[in-house]
Amino acid sequence: MLFSSVVFLYLFLPLTLLGYYLINKDYRNYWLLFTSLIFFAWGGVSFTLILIISILLNYFFGLAIQKNIENRRGYWWLFVGVGTNVTILAVFKYANFFIENINDLLGVLSLPYIPSTNIVLPIGISFYTFHSLSYLVDIYRRKTVAQRNVFDLSLYIAMFSQLIAGPIIRYSDIWPQLRGRVHTQAKFASGVERFLIGLGKKVLLANTFARVADELFAVDPAGLGGLNAWLGIICYTLQIYCDFAGYSDMAIGLGRMFGFEFLENFNFPYIAKSVKEFWRRWHISLSSFFRDYVYIPLGGSRVKVSRTYLNLLIVFFLTGFWHGASWSFVVWGLFHGLFMVIERLGFDKILEKTWKPLANAYTLIVVMFAWVLFKADTLGYALNYWKALFDFSLTDDRWSLFLNYVNLELFLALVIAILGSFGFFNYIGKFVEKITTTNNIKANAFSYTYHVVSTVFYAAILILCSMYLVAGTYNPFIYYRF
Image (cartoon, rainbow, N blue to C red; front, side):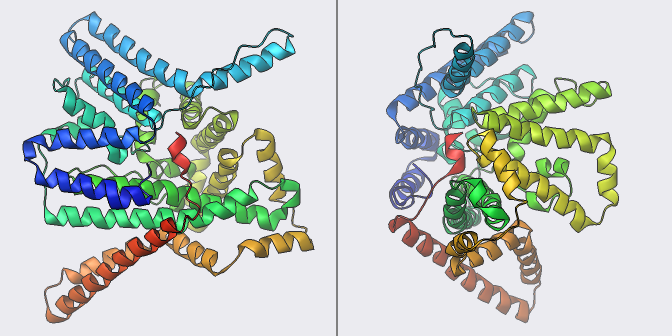
């Protein structure tokens, strides 16, 4: 079940909210857990069984680590717990990938093939596995204590608002809210607003870009030419941001509706002046997870320089591989890792002195070229697409293809998405907030008018999104498969 679906918007969410606020507050966590399991089961009951087994295993691993934390057995329980989680993820997400690559090798050696497993990837397994890993590691690091209430632990791992696509929430950050959290009208209202902003990003913007990007990336790059190739990658660059950031907005908004406060997952990554800064702004929960649980334990930057570079490449190899069982994802991760190493070699000092728009342009070019790897099904297609970006010959067919996609709807979506990606609307919001906090007649009148306009604006987003969804418009979700 997607957040951007009629079933979720007009059936699941209203019933979940109604039940949550009608029942006694002591039972609200149980209600949220129950509805979260229903939400997850929508994608397949067998997937829910895998999730429940994972939760129960981690519940007992957590208690075992806590019980033996003062002796060596605590470390071994952590080792078993982490190993079990990684194995489950590897089996369901990477078994087919490993078998395919082994069979390629066996074919070269003229040896019998390994039968394909055809294992289906359970939705959200990458995210709830990382939730479980952070829970076990934080217990061992004494950042938190093991949860003795299996239902509260289950809610942390399986809460529907961030189950299938994050953000990755750490148990040490959320556990106080599991037992007690504040519910206010202001928080609920801000949650609704944040959810609708995310819904608009997803349905009105990301889906508009998705149709163009998907169709252009389905064309042989040799027939695209530079004009269409750049249109395709620009649309995909904006699609993946509006898609994933929009989902994070919806997750954070949903959390607020139920009294939770989740950390931000995006901070205008396309305004970054370096690849290093980009990763401080893009998918913050994932980059901080790899920093704290992989990069720093490997030694981080406290080791000799060559080892630091290796640590960076390892982290970005894992970042790419986490995103999907494909060599294109691995190369995408290493591509970013390579530029992280280049910047660490001294290029970051040059960027600091470079004219900011030029540094931003450099970062965007690197990121967009990397997105080609992320989008392409094969490395060969990605390489050919890169070549097409530099093919500036314009034939009648290529011009006709370009005009087939460029229309008023796409133009408006591009303008809104680019302004939003560069923080224009955030700046306007802060400016308005500054005015409305002033206590005088003009400011009060402006504040009242602003709130009326805002209400109409959010209602319009909901109506427009509903119309698009009811009409059955193109509605893919990139991170749903991770």
